[in-house]
Length: 84
Image (cartoon, helix red, strand yellow):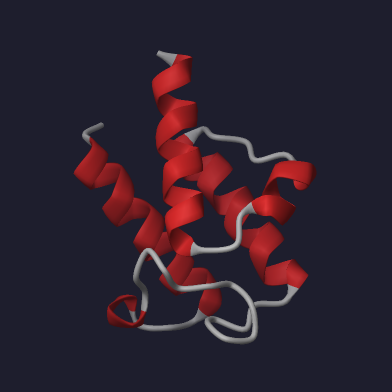
C-alpha cells in the first residue's frame, strides 16, 4: 500500500469515526476541544478500526501521545514501514 493510500485511509477512518466530513480534517487538526473535540472512547474506537483495517496496533500509552491527525498518520506510516 502506497503512502498516499495509507494517508487517505487514515483520513477516511478518522472522519467516519469522528462523524465529520473529510474536508474538515488536516494534519494539524487536533483531537482535543480546539479541533475534533473527540472523547477518549471515539479515539479508542478510531485506533481499533485502524488496527482492523491497516494492521497497526496503537498501544494506549502511544495513543495518548497522538494529539493531531498528522501524529496518527506519522505513527501508522512508520509502524507499517517498520513491519516490512
